[in-house]
Image (tube, rainbow, N blue to C red):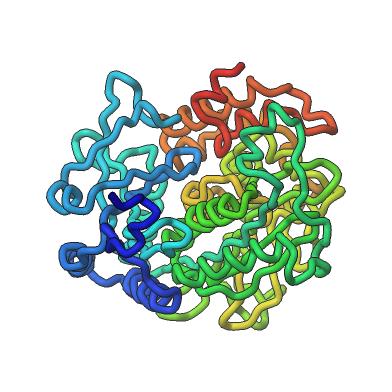
Length: 485
């Protein structure tokens, strides 16, 4: 009888889809083009269903959605089951923090067929594709706490009624640490280990940080991100990979995919990609600088060559509304205990409620631009913010929020963002504007989950990272860690 070692000529029992990176990029860029050009959803759905039916090498479809805090959730559906049951996908919403109560736990998922990605098989495994979904209530209406759906509907309405389209580009910084699941093990180890101390321009081409950046950037290109540049950042073991702007919902989807693929690439290399805003004291933190402009008919409405800093009156009005409501918005853009360590003026922190063309301590910066690139950069967004909630609140506030008092007799003074989550919570909960922006129910739910995390951490930040602010961080914690209190 032949031994198992001798059966090397036996044919493979599996033939799952694996696509070359160049072909992946072509497919994903074409899917992205359809979204940006607003190809009718029914037409795209028909194409995707036909593709999944005909492509026998796909075994499963990963259906993704985000919770209220911006954490990505994924369910793998057998392809044949999904094609039969796409109109009746349900999940237990009571298991998701900030979603439904136990007595009303069932929620629905509506596949958003245009938000479809072909995946690099060496990162995500062969035979899978990914699609985002909208969360629906039991009666089939959009679920109030699903900010992705709310952002999508708001931007569609803007386009339909005013011809306005928001162009968004997020610059997402992160850290690379030694060992897998370094954040989950932090309560035991009480430290993060740098993988590199090379700094901004001084990491060697073959060191671990560079190898990680190269691998992650390759995966991003294959997924149609349209990369622009990637590099180590100022702090030790810190990285940033920039890619082109896109329509608001597409840009927010890419934030979650960026973090997902960075985490998976790092884990494949025995490391951890971390998006805590300030995981190590004494060095620069990480941000998610949000670049934004508005356009209609291809014309950039934020550009005026004769305007202050090249920005139009509309752009300055947008900034004015953001600054006037900055304190109330702060919790939405800096939603964790740890985020308030980043708002430290000693490390280029964007904690001043003002706009500037050059001062990187300002909440809003006006980068040098031209007719094509003129934009504003909201610097006070942390990398752990819910990207849909952040973009939605910035857009709605800049377009509809209360403007500042134009009284010339008022003495101007420099104002600062809250330096701790408790003050941010107080401003958030007491805001009538936030209640209008989100609805009182979602405002209360968001405050509740953030209050719960804040109460598990020391009220005074102090100078050292505390175990609790990592352990109970919404992107780190799980049922096991949450119950170790």
